[in-house]
Every structure is written in C-alpha cells, then in structure tokens.
Image (cartoon, rainbow, N blue to C red):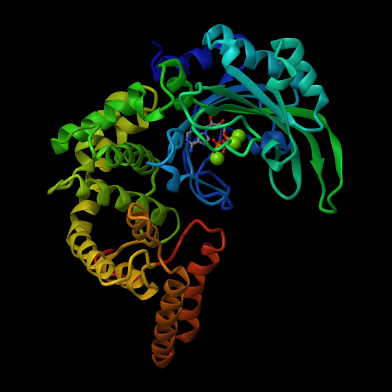
Length: 469
Ligand code: ATP
Ligand code: MG
Ligand code: MG
Ligand code: MG
C-alpha cells in the first residue's frame, strides 16, 4: 500500500522522466505578493513565469507544494473536522508548462500517472470539463476512452480559472474518484456533489486566454498548464478509504494525540483528534516558515488556528499543554521531505507551549462563561453579540473559535451584535485617544486593522484583549 511519502516521489519522478524540473516547494509566506496571505496552490511561486514577466532555464516544472487554506478566497478552516477531505494544511502535487506543452500532453500525462503509475482503476474515475471546451472533452475521450456520461460538462466558474481580474485565465478539467455507493454524494454538477462519495483529486488548468480590463479575451500566444493534485486525497483512495484522516501520515498524528491524552483515537473524541492532527500540521509549518502568533495579519490567522486546536485539546481533558508534545511525531513523518521542520523543531515546540500556557488561563474561564450564557438562553437561540465580544475581548477567544464551539451544539453567534460591540469599543477608544491629543495616530492605528480586514484574512484586531500579549 503506497504511503503518502511514496506517492510524492512517484509523482515527482514521473514528471521528471517527462522532462520536468523538480522545483522545491516555496515557503508558505509568499515572497513579493502582499495580496496573498499564504501559498494556497502550486502555481503561486510561478505567477511571473505564467505572465511572462520572468523567464527561467526550464519550461516544465513539477512540485510538491505546501499549501495553507485558512483565510481569504480559499478558506477550508471550517471544513476541518466536518469533511473527510479538507485540511488547513495540505500538499499539492503539480506539473507546470510555461508556454511549452498544452492540453494534448497535460491530459495524457495525468491519465498515465493515475492509471499506470498509481494503478487507480479506470472505472472509478470521471472527469469534468468546462462546458464549451470541446477540445478537452475530445482528448479525454480519445486518451482515456471514457464514455460521454463520465466526461461531465460544467457551466460554472468552478471549471473556469482566472489568475485575477485581468491576466491569464482558461478552462479547467477536474478528475474525480468514485468511492462507491456506500457513501452519500453525487457526481460533480449534481445537487449532491458536496457528499463524500465523489472526491475531486486533481485539477488541470489550461491557461488559454488573456483577460483584459474591459472584459475582452484573446488567445495567449504561449499557452500554459498548471495542475494541482491533493496528495492526502490520493493517499486515501490508494489506501482503500475515503477519509484523508485515516491515511498513514495523518493517522499517526491522530494516534500521537490519543496517546498523549490517554484517550481512544476512534472514541467520542475522534473529531477533536482530527482537528488537532490537522492544526498541528498547519501551525508547525507556518512557524517553520517564520510566522509567529500575533494579533494581526498572518500571525493572527496562526493564533486563531492554534487556539482552536487548544480548545479541542481541552475537550479531550488535556490538563497540560498538548500540542508541543506532538511535534516530534510530525517531524518524524515529514522532516525528511521538509527539512525546515527539523531545523525549526525547537522553535515550534517552544512557541506552541508558550501560547498554550498563556491561553489556558483564559480558555477555562471563557468556556465556563460560554456555558453559563448558553444555559440562560432559550433553546436554539443565537449567542448575543455582546457575549461573544466579551469572550473575544476579555478571554482572547477569536470569533471563529466561539463559532466553532457553538457549531457542535447547533448554535450560532449574533455576528451583527458582535460587530456592533466591536465598533462601539473602537469608538470609545478613539474618543479616549482624541482626548490625549493623538487622534491622528489613533485613526491610522485602527484603520490599519480594517484595511487588512478588507482582504478578509484577518478577522479582527485584538490589541485590547487580555492575555494575548
Ligand atoms: P474542493 O472543491 O474539494 O474544495 P478545490 O476545487 O477547492 O477542491 P483546487 O483549488 O482545485 O481545489 O486544488 C487542487 C487540488 O488540491 C484539489 O483537486 C484537491 O485534491 C486538493 N485540495 C484542495 N483543497 C484541499 C484541502 N483543503 N485539503 C486537502 N486537499 C485539498
Ligand atoms: Mg475548495
Ligand atoms: Mg473543486
Ligand atoms: Mg478544483
């Protein structure tokens, strides 16, 4: 049974054989790209090659890219613990052509890799194409011999990729695996497509056009290829499960979490172990790439993920900081492929331990307050915004942590009320600062948080929250 580490090398070696340069993953913090919080796909490090701004001495590349999707356009944070196939941190395997080959090669490469190298049975596979992309549909038919009902035409943006409002864009083709009718779900494009039966494993993007400001498009002179395959999803199907969390690497982290808390990995606390295993990977890799927990920007996303994990550890009954004790298992699993984890191991452990020690004091009290609030509310009522704000302001609970806690109970937060309480506190602070004669600076200080907030990565600035330092 191929392990996740085997699959990574099979993929990279296959594309190396096809004349691709094996390029290392870029760091999670993109260089020179303030519009993007974290690398969230393989193409991020190659943007300038696709637009033609930069040239390198290779026209074909292949990577295993570290990705984090916990904010911005792609935010899978709320999927963790709920779907079998989403993580905040995952590895995306990709092959890229910079003005070299196009669809006529990209599709046969993909098909050969999954059916010959990885031996995935053909009758479990189906593909989507953009509804007008006859060319891709014809190639699939010829190369894979798929019947028409297994080449699904999708008219939505899901199958049309754009780098931004202008620039390279084009149709995509996604490859799905059918885990069988013991799982709920329908094929892509059907109303049940969000189920766990049909899982998207690989997305092929055909950069065919250039889009201009007025909305018009022309064919790119050098058409390019960008693909992304989720390694954990492929590991799952090759290991005979539809659950990414049951695969070798992630399962070993779940077992480490169960051992450290003397609990059953598959018992009633299993969802906590899943979240912890996922968040352990994203927090450790972020710290290894230089992100530190803080109250704004990337650091606040990291802090939010860490604190969510800590609440789940608390629910498992962990009395002492837990996350830092799991780092050796992660390094053991992934350190060979990502040596930065080895180098940063001490820093990761210390950072997790410190954050967990600090937050523990307010976490226990905050959770008690939350329970008290809930028991005083009518059944099913939303948590009032002021209560969520108090948790945030006094106990250091990011709003999404409170929402995560309530979701288990089928409850929500009155977010309008939360925003109002936040606005009121800011107004008060502004007035106080105005009195001190520093009004101009204060306005800039607060607006900074809001400008960043506009990219919807940051949530809220928390400079007033106790226990957050
Ligand atoms: P989905 O529709 O399942 O959310 P996506 O269309 O958002 O996936 P892409 O942006 O096409 O994903 O990324 C390429 C591949 O990366 C996907 O085909 C999938 O295998 C994998 N992938 C995407 N998001 C995640 C995630 N959060 N966790 C694990 N793998 C992922
Ligand atoms: Mg997605
Ligand atoms: Mg998709
Ligand atoms: Mg996709």
